[in-house]
Amino acid sequence: MRYISTRGQAPELDFEGVLLAGLATDGGLYVPAQWPQFSAADWRAMRGLPYAEIAFRVIKPFVGGCIPDADLRRMIDEAYATFGHKAVVPLRQIDANDWLLELFHGPTLAFKDVALQLLGRLFDWALARSGRRATIVGATSGDTGSAAIEGCRGRANLDIFILFPHGRVSDVQRRQMTTVPDANVHAIALEGTFDDAQAMVKALFNDAGFRNAAGLTAVNSINWARVMAQIVYYVTASLSLGGPERAPAFCVPSGNFGDIFAGYCAARMGLPIAKLIVATNRNDILARFFETGEYRKDGVNPTISPSMDIQVASNFERLLFDMHGRDAAQVRKLMGELDSAGGFTVSANALAETKRLFAAGRADEKTTKAMLKTAFAASNGQLVDPHTAVGLAVAAEQRTKAGLPPDTPLVTLATADAAKFPAAVEEATGQHPALPPRMADLFERPERQTVLPNDVAGVRAFIESRRVKA
Ligand SMILES: *Cc1c(COP(=O)(O)O)cnc(C)c1O
Image 1 (cartoon, rainbow, N blue to C red):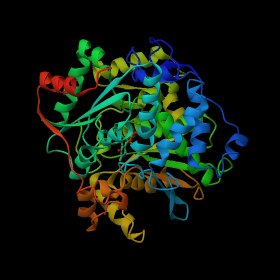
Image 2 (image 1 turned 90 degrees about the horizontal axis):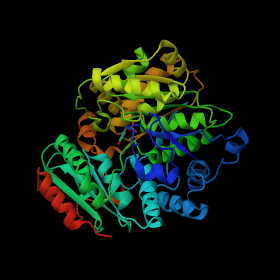
Image 3 (image 1 turned 180 degrees about the vertical axis):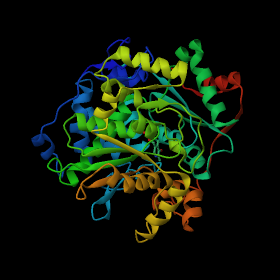
Image 4 (image 1 turned 90 degrees about the vertical axis):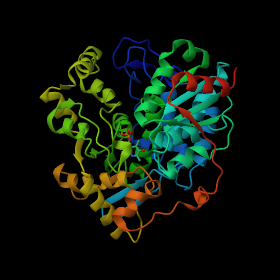
């Protein structure tokens, strides 16, 4: 399998190349040169198989011979053995034709574990093969940092440094980063805001000498391997609900468009999907796009679903590329307008074509809180998290608005455990969401973190002193 850049001016790479590269050198995102095709018989043959076996079959064509089958299978088995549910991503029925796909049974209780548990292992494998080490550096406002740490802890060929704003992440989020004992994990509490932490990471990457010497790498959401790993649960959910003979719809709480783009990939691979519904909070650049065809930046408003508080959706460029017949020149032009003028508009044709598969909606804070309550009342005491509540609210509205036949199974992706956002959940429902038993001692585990001033030279020196030299 070859990978091409959405901007058409970066070298074509194989899977190992895109895994380690992340962003393409022309500023674009890597996508597969062709979509692997699965027939109805191929899908049927996966029915009833364990999650890891389906993952292996779905992922194998994307890896395209770069990784020996036995190694790939072992990494997949290990990645999903860390999940606290035998089904890995169980489906829970919540109404006659409505379902929740629980993606939060991984080590950090949010869906990012599905991708990052595999990504850390793939990275380590690729580094070992080329005899290299890497230093992963990232900034987090909460969720991604802990999932990246869990995916990379104890890996032989990498060190991971995660910066978070000191005193500005929740206790659960901080402890998920600071209680991991592995020596290659470094949690840095930066004296500043999340924006300061992000600017710090940017400054470190812009220091070419340091970047090359330390082998700096990011594991952000534009990495193709993260999207790839997420395709699998669209397949398992569909097969459980009668696919490929029946086509379910999916409603996806969205921020950077990585999760729902994986659903699009599944559709392009031949999986019957009735509709992909983008659910946003009040940071609604995506919902506005699907209504008007205009993609325009706006400020970021903080919400109780913080992992969806984004200004632009970094993976959207991948859809834009396909929407324009894979014309990289067109993508360069539109992304240039986004930079220079803050937005762009696609043609009515391109929008209409895209809306055959996609629909979108938004939920404001009031609607989200009301849904937290409604979902709790309707479920025999099962709480959902605020991101999932955004999804449920939009799903309820779009079942009719998007014209889904009433017997279409509608699956809302449950992207986090309620226990990850206890303050918002308790405020809306009066119920305190308990941590799952395997994490019940989180508040007793010893913490290890380094508080550093917001100073590039100091942070760089800290990383230099702690990373293991090859
Ligand atoms: C990251 C995240 C999202 C958004 O996913 P994208 O792939 O960025 O669209 C939604 N919910 C939770 C809990 C998340 O952590």
